[in-house]
Image (cartoon, one colour):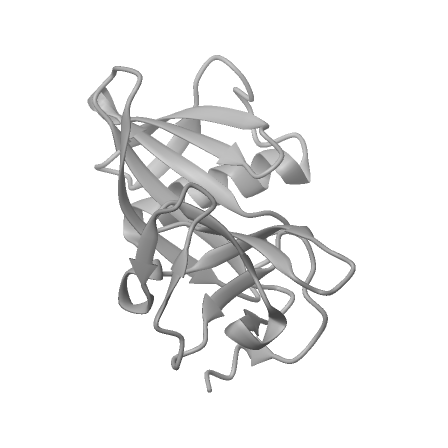
Length: 167
């Protein structure tokens, strides 16, 4: 078992993976996904019987899971999911990374747009948009936060934009 895994009570926004002996899951929409294709999950809800609603990021399936079917990462673990956009309404999953002990307070989605535009979307829906400068390997806010980041949330969004490019 990975040293970032713990045995504690599941919490909303907690990061999980499926147990190795699980064959697969059936999503709420009826879709079946094998264990090998599930990837990392984020807890979205809990029931009194300790079942948890998990969104499996890589396979984009949502299902209720029993506690004995999942393994929890430590409480500092966060997911950064990276998607590529073509400028239209759709987005395509590219990769995700679990980070721990780096100071992130939320799970994040990052959208990479044409012309080096990056949008970071926090798990609560808050979003920040940046220009990406490949030469400097840095993200700079677009039309907001022109100076140094004003809040911890702003700094976290910039950090996530930059981490997404190095995953």
